[in-house]
Image (cartoon, rainbow over all chains, first blue to last red; front, side, top):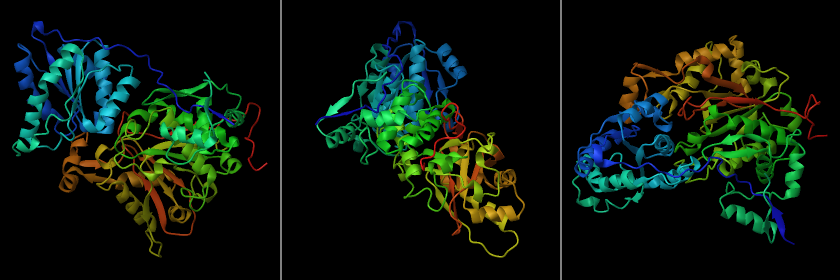
Amino acid sequence: MPVNYLDPSAETATPQEPYLARLDERCNPRIALFANLFADSKEFLLDLASPLGRLLSGSTYPYFDKQYGRYMSTAATPELRARIIEASDAVVLAYGHCGSCTSGVVHDAVLLAQQGRAVATMVTARFRDEALFLAQALGQPELPFVFLPHPVAGQATQWQRELGERIAPAVVKALKTGASTDATDVMTARTTVATA
Amino acid sequence: MTREPLTAPTESDAAAALAKNRQTDGLPIVVPTPERVEEMLLYAMGLPRDASLGHLLPRNGNLTIEKAAINAVMAGCAAETFPLVIAACEAICDPAFDAGPLQNTTHPVTPLIIVNGPARELYGVSSGGGAMGPGWPVNLTLGRAIRLILINVGGGIPGVGDMASLGSPSKLALCLAEGEEDSPFEPLHVSLGFDASDSVVTVLAVEGPHTMMFNLDEIENQADLFLRTLAAGFANPATNNIYTGVGAVAAVLNPLHAKILQRAGMTRRDVQHKLFAYARSTRSALKAISGANINTIPHSDEVVTVVQRPEDFLIFVSGSDGGGYSAYFPTWSGGKQGNIPISRKVRFVDGCEMPRSIRD
């Protein structure tokens, strides 16, 4: 005798929107670097400006962060978001590296994208599934990510700089085309990188 | 809106499908057949099945009365206890509960559910010996129903929406009643602004309980020593609270320990103020012990506190009086508010002053 039963799950009630923001690099783009202050995120982003600058001529890199690590799990305040919007044409966010900070960084990326800024959101491999789930839950399933190896925090400075060099093209691609990149294996040759 | 029922060849197959789809907590469930769900809905206080109790993050799922009932059936809740489930659902859907990042965090936090008022006895919510452990079906099924709802409506699937590094057995169920009759203080819900005659469910996202040992002897200043010991637990450098310093923390005192405080003439407010004075450290002391943890402190003062205000210590009484153990609950202390307690009245059927007893 077949058994009927009811579905305990609920779908997201958030309307799904296409991701439409794209970076126009013809006019000396201002690329905001937005660190959530998870360990090494600030340094990683500041170092990333150099390889990005070689790929985007005339670009500039205003820096923003959440002031204290305690705030990494929540979306930026409207005031901080407004300052970022005012100062930028696109935003690179780093990084989803834990559960709640991935929540915070994806929230930030969605809110910035909804205000017309192209975004590239970096998340480490361990939190990839969470980031994709959250992007859909927040109504932006096409949000572009650059997925990094895990961990990034705590790695040697030179290793992080090398990672930045290798993922910079993926960041530019995310900003210009809205495409995500899985760069989780990009440092498989990590043993060849000098450790500090 | 009710969807068409799913179909499986047998109940075992239905249970297996739910488990395969990651719609359970990993334990066997009661299959939510339409008939069982209908029985649960009889105790929905007349609320329509598609009435929304709120939206639950991170998925932002619409938590309807029906979804609550389906998950309550799966948890094994007695239908009569559904009003408790509804009250707890309303609490976790409050935006101030911050269910999104709470579910996402790698920190293994879970709702501690505390029941106060007449519903305790009428529904059989235990406040006695071992109340947070095995053997108390209403405590366990209520806690479990909320966990299933967090998974199925909120999207807290382990490894996707729930990123806890280790998880915690407390995530399966963490629920008890306050032993109001054993407490020298006014009931917890009264201290939170409710009437004593109200039945109230309070939730606070916490780590599992940490035991606090305090052996009684004849010395004079036991109350002060007790509170210093408890404060040291709260302020220990392995917990979040001493670094973030916001939100609330909780402690459940066993009746013997509560009597120490009573003999010293202390009210709950006195206890909270003493804990606030004692549960603190210094930036330099923490830095010497825990390195980079110090970077999460959102201010530059040398003295750091576990919470911002005395009333942020949520103190209640439960358990047996047969030992020297109470418990304290560190919390996540992240999110917008640093996670705070949320209380909701248990709503009864219109026209009824009291819920129906499951003992009838």
